[in-house]
Length: 326
Image (cartoon, rainbow, N blue to C red; front, side, top):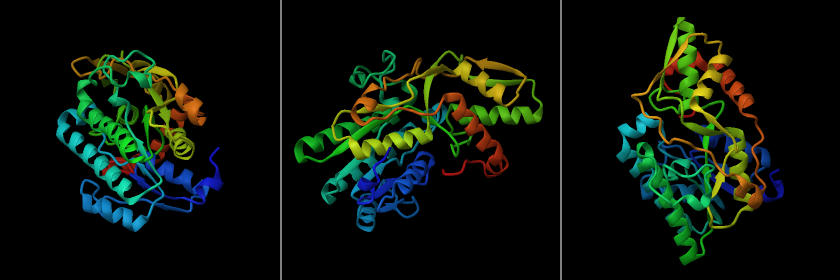
């Protein structure tokens, strides 16, 4: 679906390219035959500092910059470190976009977050609803920091004619995800907790919240394809959702993972813990209309691939205490 004739002429820098989503974007770029791909590592380029951003652009000379680097985590970590989630994500994006404009790059691909949507957005979330209220409180600092980069992109386009695009992926999952229980999102955290409970022979597992909240999940390989199709074909300022177009409740999700892992104990819901945003599902029609993206991977198939990867790597992950790619 990607056009090799386009990519073979382009040098691409992928911030966060060694992370979960970034590693799949890099694989897809390699497959498409990109002229050159650079993946800055944090120890070499701390993108919170302008000097590091300037060094990166001078060293990699990109035509296209895909900005995936972010400080990310689940509800618990967002509540524990809201200032870092705000500052790190805002400052990285602001420096990168400003210096990319000064450097004269062809296109800046900004990866936003579904957390930028207002708490009570009508489902399915439409891009037009983005400014109709305040985000869900547990991750508002993160969501608003990323949302400011949409404003920056529109301002730089208006004043300088700078070409930046803004994508809003839903919750992503897949092989190589972050399985650290302190910082992981719901799918990897649940897979790990249920696997460990099964190994111990536990009769029950405690799950956060009531299970009533719904989420939409997009398989990571599909997300990588969507990002690159947009980089290649999409040129407008309007933000675009990237999703699968289907919703599942957290309760259904946890029971499905338990079934795949053969966990026969009881799931106990701890309603003293927050559910987060009540419902989350995206209208994905704009991505299909504007650059021909539609998710390919059925949810249970993607989930089974993710669980298989985790089981093959579990000993390593638990020993290190963190997942690969983070």
